[in-house]
Image (cartoon, rainbow, N blue to C red; front, side, top):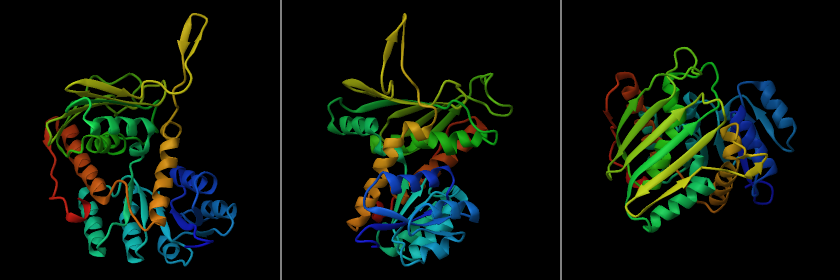
Length: 339
């Protein structure tokens, strides 16, 4: 470890998420420092590195990961670049926090899992940050306690104010509903076996060529039905909600955040404008937990298996979306390393 036991981290990708992680490590969490930043945009990487003592800018991930002052890696580059960066990290036996997706498809995720298994130990934590959100943690603890009995259904709403012009139909599944896929697997401790995607008449706010909103139904191997309303052009803000319906009661999260005001015959509060603000605390907890575990010589949190399972469900979801029919999810047998 560098600098009196602190973890020297290379951040690969300095776009919105990567730059936010650099800020987080530098200003918020303890036990780590940014020792390298990597981006194909050399000037952007240099500008970021220049503001951090002892930080070096790179354009090549392999060069950064080979540096003596790099002890661990955060991968925040676009999904198609993840596999190469992960395999390079494995070559140096470096712990990795990889933003979702682990990789963009199940086949490449399998290759990553196979390479990690050859190491004989876990090296990857996948960045499914909702598992670190205070409300989701509370719901998980309640379901695990058995107080409400067996879960029967899980209702989810996932709404964005709007999306960028390049947002595609497939991204509704791969970039948005993927979070509900992972959090459902985690909350229920069950695998998703099938998916159906239904489309109402599109909103007038939806851009040309994007059928928005959509309604997704997931089936699990434990007999739970999970539904997701995904609406990415709702206009009013960013909203994530979940309700578990169990044998002996229900539990709902995400209804309101922050201060509630009553004034002049009206009541209300604020709605987060985007996911970064809504889940800022979850990101902080996620990265701190990863740093703490790494300093202990451990790897915790969502694994490469979770990244692979999400990719497999997404692939089935995109097929269901395109073909308008229930589609089964194909998963390999879970390897021993991830049990």
